[in-house]
Image 1 (cartoon, rainbow, N blue to C red):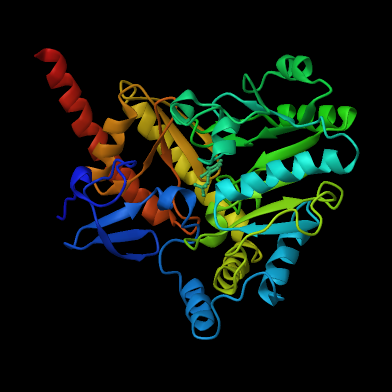
Image 2 (image 1 turned 60 degrees about the vertical axis):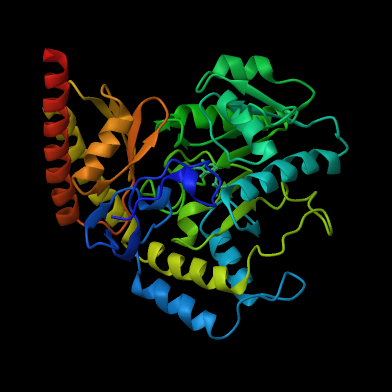
Length: 404
Ligand SMILES: *Cc1c(COP(=O)(O)O)cnc(C)c1O
């Protein structure tokens, strides 16, 4: 097993890395360089939507790689037009701007909202209402949008224009709106914050109040999008469509792609020269993005995801029932599921990993399970057996600890 203590490498020490190095992946499985096999129920943090080395994605990427990689946005990119159109055809949106990451997609969403009001003669409208527990990225603007002290500390003055409110609190939203308010920004299911879904009722309330006050509704579907919750986008469960939406993670299936989607009206201010990107929407990325949509938008694919996700949820509920001293409950939507822990979530993640299942910690002492959307019932059974063993051992340890 190759272990690389952080402090001895040339890489910034900003990540705590597990002592595992993967050499190869296939579907839901990852293989280490020393031959161990893992069920990847973290999917690279909701990124590997179609698992590892999906043949259709490999084919699309390699075919494109031998033709053309990059030309810049100074030229026509037909596959960018195509992917943009497909995203519009299947959502509320009319316009798309492609980026390389989630935070960049969020930056574009924030700029688009402010610029809309500027364009309409209201340059004072710059404030965006956001919610406690949110995560929107790690740029200077998006850490301000997320509002979490641990991400803001030491990085100078907090970027202005973000007002944070309790998650799901309609009265707080009503009271916070004033002449400076430009938009409301929310994740339909908070991911990093601990797998916390907003109710359909709350999203509908936000839609209505935005309409009443001429505000733009922005969704961050970077984690929830592209089939993760069993719909193409999570907001489609509620019927409350946004004006602007940031996406990333799953749309690239492992290739770095993000995008900001908007209605024609919301995108009005983003005229020639107002925004740009060197890499965003390049031919390699667009070939992969289109290939991901070939699969995700195929007839019956999302229905299959919904059914498999239901099975995973039932299995997790049984797991929680079997170990009430370690797990409090199961929450989430589709294949964005969280185990709210009584034990330390980090201990549970480690125990699962030792048993051969990869999962991801989140806020509020939650363990996230977000397998590739192509996971099968058999994979879930196997993972569930391993997670059972892991929690059995962990509860043994906890008991031994208490006896001492
Ligand atoms: C991951 C994530 C981001 C940030 O995306 P990056 O690609 O890491 O910049 C923003 N918002 C949400 C909801 C996310 O899950």
